[in-house]
Image (cartoon, rainbow, N blue to C red; front, side, top):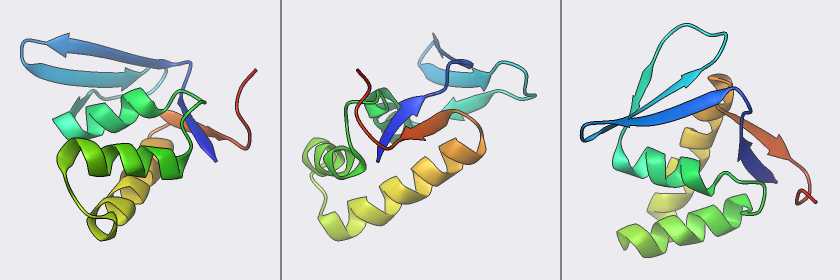
Length: 91
């Protein structure tokens, strides 16, 4: 599975904060550093296992910690329509 950012997603840095909103939905979401890092990897070219590996390397954490956290965040981002999933790499 290859997550990608929704076409309706808008991300902006406001001071030291990173905020995201989905056009057509109410609410603005403040992202922490880890969520923003993962969201940048949602580009149709990184698979979920590759994102997990990159999180492990960037934050020096184990697979046992990274794997459930990445899955939980991707599920939340999907529920918020920030991320969609492609079964194969985009052309």
